[in-house]
Length: 126
Image (cartoon, rainbow, N blue to C red; front, side, top):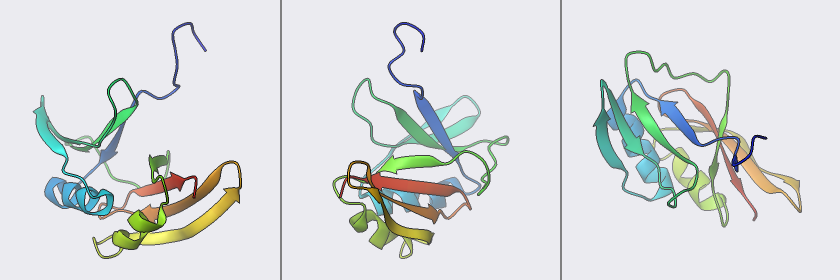
């Protein structure tokens, strides 16, 4: 990687067709309140991130198309993704791969469809 590059990813966006519904879904499963802000002709709701760390947002824009195909984002489910996973279906999503161990060093993952039809994953050590 080029000098000064610490992460291959520095930003991601999860597209929505219904911004309010998508934001409510992620706030519900993650147990957070997301900061919402217009950005040009897009609306964004920012997922939690420590200063200087990789961040992302739910985005509503005419060119943002939700999809279960293509790149998959893994959200931080630490310390144990079970808690978040338990809220997904109540919030309107669908678990498509239950909590599964990769190996003891890497931990666990699960995959779900959000309310917009995006395929998203969770990862945790426990």
